Length: 564
Image (cartoon, rainbow, N blue to C red; front, side, top):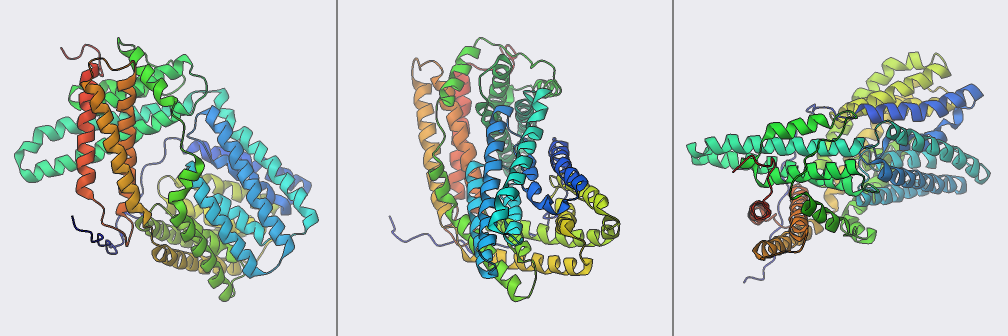
């Protein structure tokens, strides 16, 4: 065997086509949109009535926590939102204390960059989900450049804490009406994704025999649909595993997710219409469809076995994120210093722009940069149009900010640049809570900082290579192979333990999802070892064949009695 190291993959062509394509909105876009309006509106209108709108920046720190955790079940959401609020308070505390101790812009930019890197690493490690670290970076960076004394810090933190507590209540309130809403939505997505794969499998199997080219295209399409379905099923299990006590509705949801898993493993024996019917029945507050079967007890024993496996320690999850943290720290610091060198009065906008770029790989970072620049430039024009209305008085200013808060959350799930169109004027208007300013100066600073942050931030992403991406693929491949071998041994066993084969099958499915996510992330990275595409595809296909064999060994069917 040759000992020569694999040659690194060259820089790939950066995409432009599709970067600004508008997609479908999130199925719950209105939840974060309405939540943030209520969470921000009550404190801001209270400050307006008291004549202290200048303190709104501190209440915004707590209020914007209402944007998080909308996909989590309420038991898990309570914990996640509490940690989000505590994390926000910690970030603001560091920023305010630093601002009170020094006025050196060089020091403030350095602290802002380190905070952004820490926020990026922790948000990615905990997978808190959108909007990720951007809100933390926005608030902490702005707080660094707010005039401050040590004596004022406790009062300002108290305002942020009070608004954070209100945001927690706003985020938990829907649970009074629909206590299992997030789990039901996640299960419905899994059922619909499994139905889509089953439909594609049947259609492409019928046409794949026409030619080798058609067969290859059909196979690639099936692989993508299967990967999407497996990811949706995995997300549904994560949602269910995050819940507290297992009530009967949650057990019924688990059985439905098992049916989605089985459909992915045995698409030819699947009735997509029934899966979609179950998904429709999960809307609203009606009873969860019952899919009891002779094998239900063994299925849920498998669920119990998987629930008993603990999560990886936080330190282990932070390790692979070190390159992204370094990119964030370097990019934010350089963006802030370039902004200072250009004489811009608000370098924290450049820091936030750079912090918002960093995604799982360079290709995605480039796409986010294009979206950010386009959205911010259009947003500046929107601010120019709205500024005369907002300057009619403090009440008009607050109402305009609330409208942009709603618009940002309503649009951002369709494409990031659309949400940025509303985020930009909102950020500009927030700076005027302490007093109206000249629109031309604000607009110029925002444009310069956006361009500087995007260019410098992307340059830092290129400079800091992520050599660990290749190692993560090797580890993911090893994990899949171990899970496949374990499942195969149980399939061959005469009498596997109760729930053992079900748990092994689900563990293999989870490993395949992680492999696909790791391979996709590595495929968009520069200057690393070539991605072993053929090995990944082979591992995925043999893994899914093992899953199908496990389903047949268990005697499971999507519809009991559908096949003889």
